[in-house]
Amino acid sequence: MPPHAPLMAPSGRMDSNIVTIDVGGQIFQTTKQTLTAAGTKSLFSEIFHSSASGQIGVPFVDRDPDLFSVLLSLLRTGNLPSKAKAFDLQDLVSEAKFYGIESLLVSSQSNPSQFDAFNLEKSLILPLNGRDSPSAISTTTFGSVHVSHGSKITSFDWSMQRKSTILTRFFAVDSLLALSPSVAAAGATDFSGLQILDLENGYVKETLNWENVTRSSSTVQAIGSSPEFLFTSFESGRRNSNSIVVYDIGNLKPITEIGTNEIYGADLDSGIPATKLCWISSYNLLMASGSHSGPSGVSGNIKLWDVRSGNLVWELKEKVDCFSDVTVSENLSAIFKVGVNSGEVFFMDLRNLGAMNTWVSTGETRKVVNGKKEGAGSKIESHANQVFCSKGGNLELWSEVLMGSPRNSEDGLQERVYRRNLMGRVKDMEGSRITHFSFGGNKMFVTRKDQQFVEVWQSSVRGF
Image 1 (cartoon, one colour):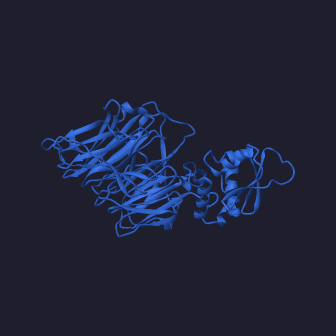
Image 2: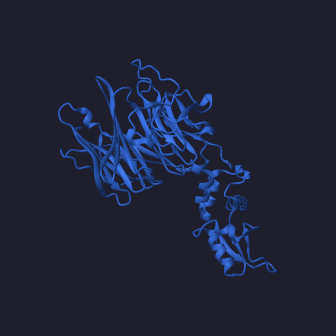
Image 3: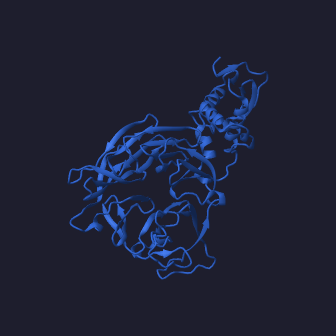
């Protein structure tokens, strides 16, 4: 018998808005409105149309009625009922795929709107095969994650139940960006070209290169994206030139180059390649930052580019307490850095872009820079309305505090106050140094030095 087939209709005429379904011998009744929530490509859509056309018989679906009951509740409310905890998540995923409503299950269990920074705790460990520690990590909107370790890239789906690993041509992947749940852009600082990888089938779809003036190889220093563009920071194999190449994210054709530098003589500061790229959609600007360590300490620069015109809109050169890492928060309209010497978090207000030239400490007092690099290896990222900063094996969460009686600063803007919280339970922290962290769905993913796994930090979700 096929998985769904009509049976004879029961006697009596029922309400035209009520739909009766027989699943595994158990009768369910729902409304046509509920069935339409499943979408036009689902099995429920077929059932809806057969009912609307007046087809005689009760549709029969040869599946587990208990699992169906859970998914029907999902259709009715948009959330899984509490009884869903009695089932294995993978069983629900398989059933949702059969009925064509996996996207609804994803939305209910791994939606970015469910992210609660103050309620995050370490909930899961994702083991990686082999002896290599993670070198890069990238996530998708609804919580699938790709992790590079050595020459391999391991992917986990949104449910963390399905795992796959592919082998790449790189010795080690240094930059990784998810373009979709099954496609990623990857590059390395010691291997020429940006590779577009099919992670499901394990092959290189396309390799993108930068034609530099010395006609040498072009290694990848950073990758970023916007809804329209793919950005790649290249450096020539001879390390005497670099550029950011802008590609059409749809067809991967090069559109333009920005920030091309060629190094002449000892002027090294002019040729620092961008090692981090962040798109600022509300300003239509690309932030590019890079730094290097020399005899006189760490120096670097942060630049904001108008991609369409190729113009440099703003630039800041750093020498005193240069950034260990830098990020942009669109929700907070600010650029944040963690100082390599002080280990402190600072910000600049994007709302006063033309006058931005001084960092403001988020802390109450500024530490004296004593020559020790307190912030070396620290990472900083923004997500939603918070800024996250790693220091050693700990994670700090910085949030803006809204003042009851706002004071204006010298530039006329409201003075901003931030407060720090240490994340997680005591047993979750003080491990090896955090090397990367990223966000997807309602989860945060964390990797640590010399550890062959990924930590999943998650807010509690109804159902699981």
